[in-house]
Image (tube, rainbow, N blue to C red):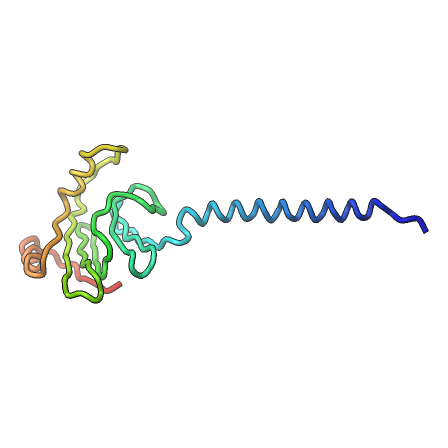
Length: 154
């Protein structure tokens, strides 16, 4: 019986092809996951996003991009409670073990186009943010502006 050397070559070609196929699939999935697989976000309207990296790293940012892992930070970590409607966002931030909480009110009723490295965009966005506020100032602002949005725990 004469050995068939071509069978070994075909087998090697199939293995090589499968390795390349797996490698390409890995690259495609990696690039998709790097965008926002590990990022949970909720769009709050007018480019405001509740961005959650994990249970402790929760913030509200302003970004025109979806799956945004960066933007203008509006409410610093860690957001513990939030609520929103078509005009307002309210939030409570701080650390769970502390009694020191900060409150935030954001008026979403404005339009601005983000231009990279433009401080005026930051100033426009921040001019619609009230906070950090203490509990009393927060309650007063809600009453004065007739804001009925209710805070909900995350």
